[in-house]
Image (cartoon, rainbow, N blue to C red; front, side, top):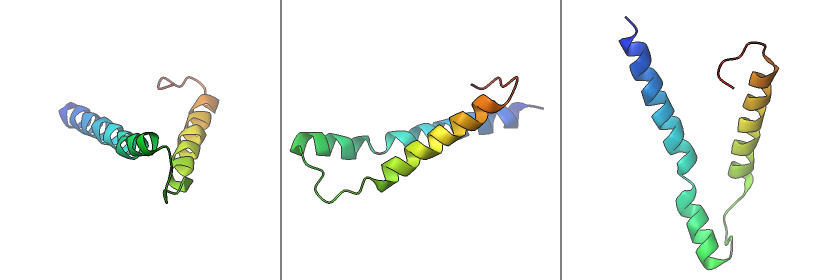
Length: 67
């Protein structure tokens, strides 16, 4: 039965979507105030690096159906 596999795949994708959409509130605040105030850019840079490394790893694999 592949129903649990599909269910957990959808839940995982939804969780990842919300994870990457979470900083939108902070971005809107920074844009409105035109200042970063005391916000650190390190979490955003690390997230970008994580995504880039993941994409690079997946691109190097042959016959990858996810990229």
